[in-house]
Amino acid sequence: MRELSPADAAARLETGTLTVVDVRPAAERAQAALPVAVMTLDDGGAAVAALDRATPLAFLCHHGNRSATAAAQFRAQGFTEVYNITGGIDAWAEHVDLSVPRY
Image (cartoon, rainbow, N blue to C red):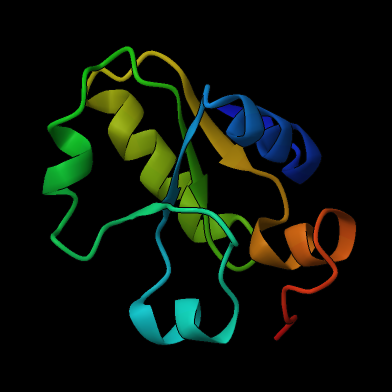
């Protein structure tokens, strides 16, 4: 697993070369969400686990701790390009999109 800055993640999202997995529960996502489609672990991770193992995945949480744990789990499942978005949604709101609420 590698770290990926929010700015680098945003750039890759714009080019369609990254899938973001938001590991926060629905209540947290309702407080502050990325303005793009993301995957979640609401189904226990089944949808993510069904992806091709070469799919570039970047995991996101509030500050980066829970997402790091999730990223490590999917890396252990054989995903080859796995990132943790450094600083989570909080850093995204501070450095990429000021319209995303901070909590």
